[in-house]
Length: 247
Image: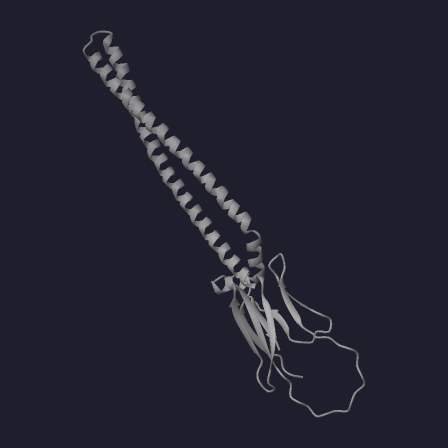
């Protein structure tokens, strides 16, 4: 019995393309990532909208704080005017001046607090803007992964396989070409050596041609189809998503 030989025919699956691009997960993890891609993209879009909402609320709070600061400054000016008038009065006017001074102090304190609120609101607005930028970058990255996966699936969507007989004693060959956007494989199968002539055997049952065909199902899986009498080469996909022919 001849020893099995493995011929690497290159990357033919989306997982293989991802591994070539630096993906480090397992095949099962890659399938889960693709299955949840739409959910992750929707979550990113929702997070983006939520961050934009926070940004708008923060900007509104900042505007309110600026308004409060302006009001406080106006109050300070009014208090200073009242204090000036109180100093020019006598008797009971001194009491009004003292009250005005206290009001001015309180207004100044409120103005300082309002200024602090305005600075804090501005910081929150800048932070929210950073979140929006990060969400946009994540959305663009996810879109790039989707395009790469779609291109890899397209190449194997209409995969075709052909075979040709080679002279006896030569090595088996596999030719892979990208034709009209899909892979085309041509297998070269050596003709067996001529053996010694044996006795004439009994007439056997009528047989048929044994061959295998390939197809992609609705989930993007590559399948090999062959009849019950098929005894030719077998196929498998290794851990890196490479299609191999076992000879």
